[in-house]
Image (cartoon, rainbow, N blue to C red; front, side, top):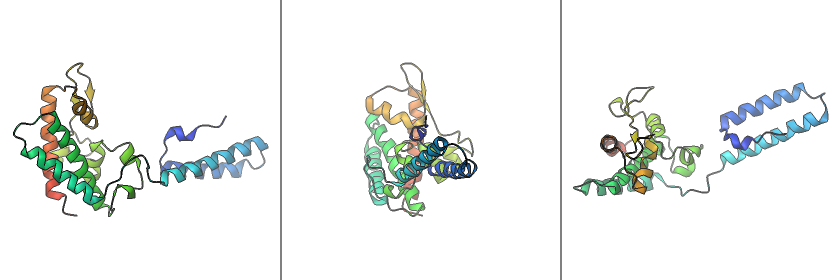
Length: 207
């Protein structure tokens, strides 16, 4: 039975490594029964197809340019700063302001014009809301993110109802659906996101 490689969600580097391995194996089994050779050819073909799919732009998301993301950051952050009292709607806007700002800066530093130009689209589809990835990529100051490799200043939070712990990337879901966080955790999280917005504001127009 041939394994389902697509279920493994392999990246380009892993697929290329497997392809090289299969090429080496092919040299060793040329004198083996035809069924074995056929299976190998099927695996090779599947890897080639998967590599092609990985290189194709993601079609299920709306892509944004550097300018779009910069404008979105400024719009969200301006609304938040204008509110005298912050509620969960403001918190949600802070979250999206951070997301837009970090992505805009990352694209500009990597000389890319928009999210459609990102070679590894899992950065958007799998890690789009995982700020830890973007913060590490951008090497934010240790005063904000904590020191490498632990980045221990990136906060997590607990839900008030069952004390379950969640990573930062899930915060937008809690705020969007009105699920109450632990009050202390929420305060720390919001203040941390605000510090990220301040850093973004200082860096979004630079290199």
